[in-house]
Figure 1 (cartoon, rainbow, N blue to C red):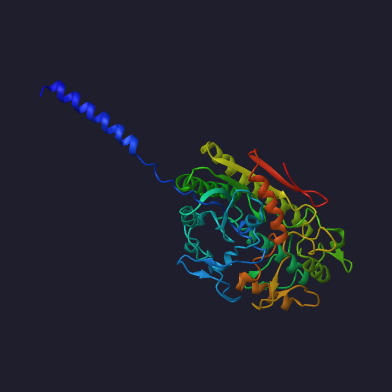
Figure 2: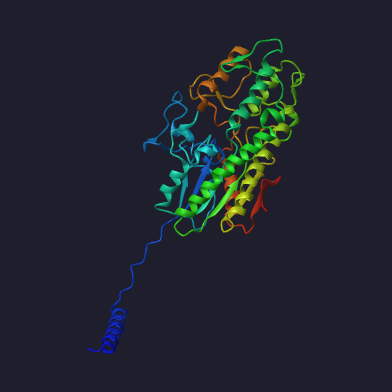
Length: 418
């Protein structure tokens, strides 16, 4: 057969075959859409510390850990304190079918890519990125809430809170000439200064750590998210204490906190949830603003690196205005944060009053927190009502067209996001 005829025949057969294939081809089976999900990553302000209703947490070995008892090692996964009342669970998020809280109280930037048990005082849970990848296998992740930066290699929120509260308690119950010893040694009795909380160098180092960790989150999300479409909300931190205490807490029995020994005042402020020197409050708010700076800087840096990603900064530093501890005479009733909570031994019963207790009893109670951190780790975190407010903030941040929003509580209790 001439070459031309073979070629023509082959071409004709190809056309016929293609036509037949088109005529009989069946539509490809539709791929079932994955359910949509919102995911929380980060530390205690996201996990729901202080909000109660803590759920079992699967540890690094795949074992679900329920409450292990007050004397259990604090590295138990349960003490991540993932709350059913956390803001992620209380926010109105239309279109979201499932919610996954992967945050862990005490979480640090290094816990994002590495199991936290690898560091001192870390809990026995898998790296948060590994947990995120597991969720992405069955879920279309549409919203991610990140709260990260308050704990890092330089400082932690818990250590800062403990330092300033302990100084006040030590000052209230002992004279400047007396020896005051916790398990960790003598405690200062003067108010906290800015340098006591975090130096500029420490804030800078924490910013770099946080940025590196969130960069890993964004990279992973772009790899595993089913449709590649997701919003990431960077939430910062709200201070549980006001800029100044209500005047009712200024002095008691003729003594204020600039005097030596003021036990009645110490007991009064403890009962109200704010065992703190008034002089420590302004440094504490500058510290909170510094944490906000860490979060905003992280978001802005990564927005430049990931221009196609949907990244929103949520400022909640004024979300508790007017409802902080000791802003009103009814405190802690009506406050949006938990008071300082201590136990006299790991009994499960919180000490609500220090009235009439001597310095030996105070020392014993304080040392319980050192030995069994779970007995006091809820202190000065948002409570369930506080997380409800943060949930309103998150709901607005989830749909805003802005790249940065502020959530503010008005005097009448209404919450606005702008």
